Length: 374
Image (tube, rainbow, N blue to C red):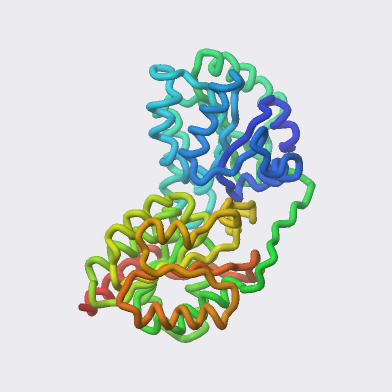
């Protein structure tokens, strides 16, 4: 289905969401036609954030907004959908567009398998009427369903279009880039060299994939790393849990700007606990690169200032490898919590692979290694 036709059928003039690779045609359409425009299109920090933002739009305009997201974000919308939007509370109508990763019968990565199984059921449990759009879904069928949805929306309830892989098409190519020169894979290679045999917790997406391949290229064991292949925004909290319980062991967290934004409250918890053995590294390319490169707001905020305000005693920003190596070495020997923000370019190798071990194997190897540490 053409994205232009779907947008026409829905008939909304305000979209907010969190980018998804399955919805890349829609994201590119929105960026090509609106960019980031508070009146028409806002990329939010997480799915609950954009759901509440959509509610505010409806309160101010009386119109129906659209929230787009990957199905992994359904967990983040449960609270606002149930306690804010629901017709037993404020009866705020919203159209959700949900990218269906892990659809049963379609091969996908392990973090998407269970989420894919329960995608439609979760919507039904939240009393959100759903319609699935696939490659062969006719425009007329979507128009007919939207006519039905309009009656549901008029009653203050919510609806969802669930988008199967390859169901949407859009021809315009949107290029995402920044002016930073450091490449993420090389940044991670420098971190690995400095960390030595210290455990590393890495965030979801290409960062974990690159870490895995760096270990392969170095002939090193994967036991040192916990690859947070899903659960976006939570790697720093996982690292905090490890650091607290292994107080004599340096622990490194490789994080991303989109992930930090998604659950920024974790920085306040880390700063309040101040684990002396944790190094929090935020690789900031100002983009949701793993799902297509759409921008985050991280290029316009002061991550170092936020870290300091949250209680991090040491926080710096670097934009070259000389400064990165210097700060990595300082953090390694420092007996205090540290944050290093690393300015990064957008882009990765075309032949970047995926972990060849299972998530359970990763967990067991990592736990076995941690059990040998004091």
